[in-house]
Image (cartoon, rainbow, N blue to C red; front, side, top):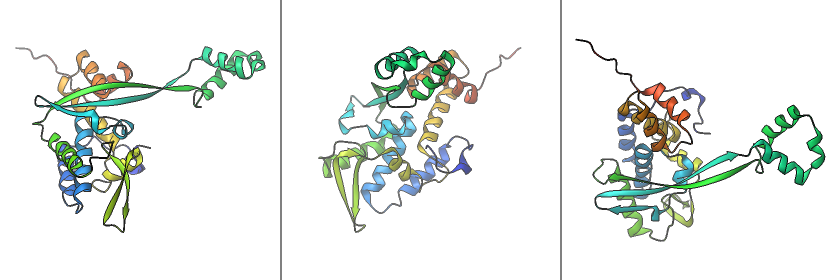
Length: 249
């Protein structure tokens, strides 16, 4: 679930004004840690457009400053569905008699099998990005990371899990990260009409508009969002890139 409210399902991408208003509202959060944390989350998604799972997997050791740049190494996890012949191999080991069924039935059962744990596998890759530390959003990330280093250096993840005690103290779980759903809940109070995947969509739109209606735009969107294929990236270009018509004199 990327956005819990159906009312905003078809809304447009997030504007710069909306993001500025979210940051401004975040500044009103009394607790310093919570204030810095949500601003850093907005900044990371705004600049890199990563999925919720990729934010939850982000460790403090994945962020490094070198020569005026912030380097961020994201862990990309994607589900890959197993093929029809892999399904046949699975049946051969677990239920050989099922292989005698007509092919159309086997194909239908294979599609259902792909939704199970045995029918797919998780592919994990690393992707390193960099951005100038002079970026206006990255300053929020640096402030947050500096706070963690000085006050909670024991935590492993960028967004560590924890719980509040009597509403005044926050106890950290150093080796556990917040879930994707918990990250979503950090954003919603700042803008009920925004959610993390929409910020990812916004980043894709930003790249598509910057590169224009070109083949290079497709590859740029794919690489920025770490999409599996060009077809998905092309949808961003079709939706958001503006085609320039040649002027005649």
